[in-house]
Image (tube, rainbow, N blue to C red; front, side, top):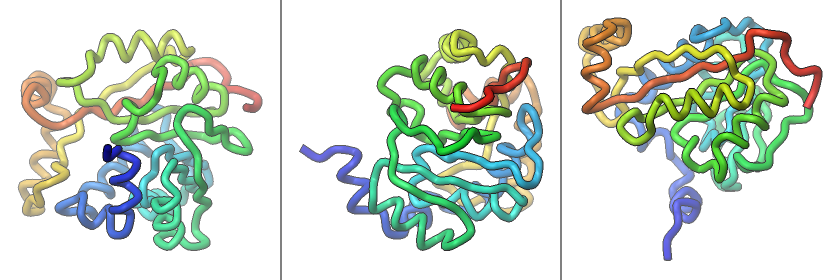
Length: 216
């Protein structure tokens, strides 16, 4: 029986180049949202990218002055991330359900992987223990009820949440003018919610309005 893990092992080399029709447009915009959504990140802040795959997002965060730590369960993906990032970042093997960084981080990100957590609420609680600024992840509203996710976040201590549509397609490369229109539509309110009924995802930033944790 072939598992997702087997697929990631076999396809680690060149993963981002195959997964994104226009990887630069997709990952550059995603990095902007990671910085801006919720409490803004500042140069020097560390971002922990859980389920980082081959570290495709890493260079875009590093270019914004952030420190990057990538973690993935698949050793082959970690090896690819190491080759991609070199000495610019730390990457290591670890899983969603048990990884804890050596020190608290400003932000934790989880993209295209939140559903791999064996217990979502427990996962949020663990992340809250070592994340001082915010958690950022993506959510397909056609698969997961936003209200249930928000309930789990609040139960884990994340009492402030900001949600934003993300309208850069993964599998289709758009001409720059069209891509700019789609990014503008992310802030279009009712029309954006209508579009989310058939395609695209939310990005969610969650944080605690009080002081962050002293340590893991």
